[in-house]
Image (cartoon, rainbow, N blue to C red):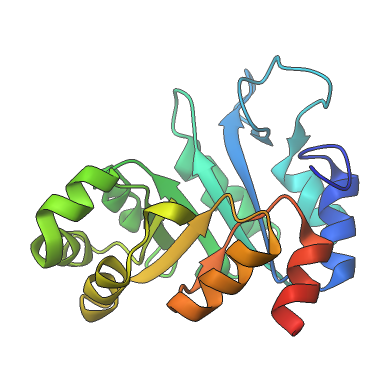
Length: 200
């Protein structure tokens, strides 16, 4: 959203043109059961929601897509269905949910990737055991705000076979920090800067 209207088709196309390898959004269902991409409640302005099918139609399928599953209804199931219909590789679809609840989505597709935004307190106090429980539940990655990751937490996650994702990575120093710490993926509102810093 630092370079184009947040969560717009223009923003997604712009990011991919810069060389970003993945996109991120929230996914909700509208009253007709269509998955819509939008940060925050669907009625929020100024950017109208973009349909998931519309994203694939305009941008193709050659990118990773991380979606925070939001709202009532069977959002995850419809999201996977629309992705399949578009020919999107399910191993590039990352469904994010709270705690271990996202583990239930494994039944939707054996290849879909699952992410938990487990509470930082649980990750710290639970240590290796907490990461082991996440991994045993069939979840692939843990997503925390960048400043919450410590070397120990990253090591615990990696030893459990989990990937480590960091959100709110907005400045050159936090981008370099993420690389030095060994994080596996970062989320940023500044795609041009991210691509430039990571290339260096």
